[in-house]
Length: 395
Image (cartoon, rainbow, N blue to C red; front, side, top):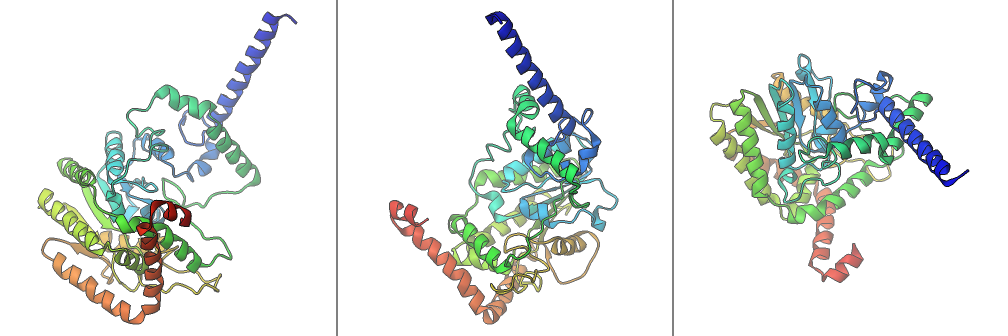
């Protein structure tokens, strides 16, 4: 075979292989990028994806009238089948480690393509931290207005990551391993592995979050993003509900031990004042579910207990759909149970004092738990005070 024929053979083979890969990725279409071409039999597995890429494709359907925004907390903690969403086309667009500026981008992208009328934004203090928007997942999604269409389609048609995910979906289908039925429209189902101690999960998550809590503050540009979102919702007649997420009481104790409690209270006050200024007629509401309520002070099983599962928490940071249902009941169905409070400029001081009183009661009965969290915070703060080389070796 001469060089020319060999070149044609190799080139033709390569082209054929690329076409096969592209066709395979289009038919499986793990990110729902090609809905007119893909096989609908894989929709159950597509529904299980929660990346920014997958969420941007969900938005492109153009028929959502209700969206949920925020971090991984509302992503896994708000139940899809709740009565609050019974008459709505609701989509959960919360993403891991989100920033307020990113939530604003997702909101703007969604309202430009959907008949949006209701927004639920799960607020976290960390949503306003000084940090850049995720440069990988976000940059590769349609939420990124600088995204190159050529790069986007090349990645989804020929990229190794898309191919791996397509094979994963195919194997799951062949094995008949279906995702949970409620895992759809962006809502995620989280489960804990059997044999795992929840106290160990608490310990791990507390240590992970402690580093950020020591230095956590509010970036002014992130507060500006919230202000713009509130103004836009007001201007377009949308119903906007801001809900401060219910972390476990031990998470609040970590924030307190890390020296961030006063900053948290100041941030909460600023949110309430921002809404009072931008939406004085009350169309935008703020609910606070943090504090020392019976649900948020749920006991953590002992280290030796690997079978008991908490009703309201996976660990200190992420709440379960059972607690998310109580939040939605309170905000949208008129429930009168004593969990959470709607905040206004008029009742904020009383609410703040109520939480302080709750905390005093909790501290008297849970001194050992508070000492456990305090020791974690002290160890982190000690590392941060050491010289950089020694700190790096310790971490």
